[in-house]
Amino acid sequence: MKLLVTGGAGFIGSNFVHYIAKKYPDYQITNLDLLTYAGNLENLKALEGNPNYKFVKGDIADKDLVNDLAKDVDVIVHFAAESHVDRSILDSSAFIHTNVVGTHNLLEAAKNNGNKRFHHVSTDEVFGSLGPNDPAFNENTPYDPRSPYSASKASSDHLVRAYYHTYGLPVTISNCSNNYGPYHFPEKLIPLFVTNLIEDKKVPLYGDGMNIRDWLYVEDHCQAIDLIIHGGRIGETYCVGGASEKTNKEITYKILELMGKDEGSIEFVKDRPGHDKRYAIDFSKIKNELGWEPSVSFEEGLQKTIEWFKNNEAWWKNIKNGDYKNYYAKQYGEK
Ligand code: NAD
Ligand code: DAU
Image (tube, rainbow, N blue to C red; front, side, top):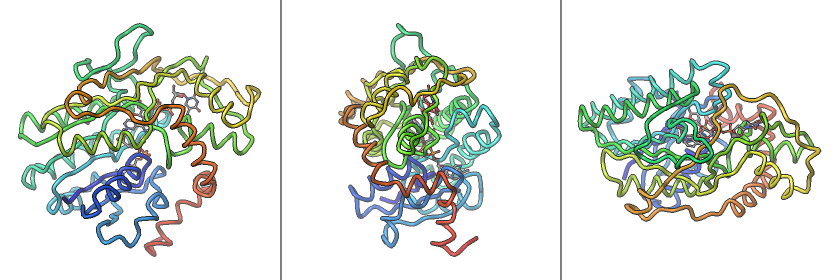
């Protein structure tokens, strides 16, 4: 099988590329990534020289490039996005460009090259915010995005569905909860807090710390996508979650405990504007249809993640000091 993976130099995309290369060594993977601030080729070092893996630096909104790449693939797995809510609050232009215009461009390329199989990686944030006693999100939950990030992802989901209904494009969508694990960019809650604590810095907890997220170890998300691209029903959406709802405060205390720190390291800071209160996922559809459920508990996943960050200091220090941006130039000889 020939896969075009977009955003494969980011957090989940690079975990997915490793997962596929290991599980299906004969699959050919082309990784299209713009290498924005969030893209890091160091994530994929182990695959350099693998004849079944190719990296292409480029923008998913580049019509000619994407059209060319779509000609020679069987499946497009679309991760590329602007993914950080706080950045979307400061300036959402890049979110519209990549998440909306870029996704539209990929859909056009898939349609114009013989209706290629298209899997769209989306988020639970498109469903909005839950109250404490509301039932978890499922595939029938109405869309109610509330940040520029989630609005741009909702928009991309609608485009994907429209291409299925209008042109018969063979699509699937997954809406997943918060991932964590190796290669997680240290601007997000867990990697930021873990790396700050290794550096003896404080951890900035937004508001009262009582917002709730559902956490999934990234490899479990990769497995869910693997099952969907191989056995998911065309035109369907699958909700993917970790059965692991936690307040940010609970996570913070757990990390402090595992890292031998105390609450003196917490700094309560101003809340995120429009901060969604709670996300939760009912993943019974993917469980019943494809036999998927999370395999890594939050306790185990968090321990593994902390270990990974302790053992890979150079990786995140290169990000924090900006050196990771030179990696492409060194490898590919381009400034
Ligand atoms: P990330 O920010 O770590 O990585 C995004 C990648 O996309 C980067 O490598 C970046 O260089 C690339 N990219 C950005 N704009 C591009 C463009 N115009 N053209 C080509 N490449 C571009 O993101 P992530 O956390 O790995 O998320 C991946 C996908 O999964 C996103 O679509 C996100 O919405 C979705 N998702 C993320 C989570 C999560 O918890 N991180 C949960 C559910 C869904
Ligand atoms: O739910 C899936 C989504 O999860 C994905 O679609 C997004 O791409 C991904 O970034 C993530 O979004 P969140 O906003 O939930 O993740 P983040 O790590 O930014 O924040 C998690 C929670 O922690 C949130 O309630 C805000 C809070 N937080 C975050 C940061 C960065 C803090 O309290 N302090 C912080 O410094």
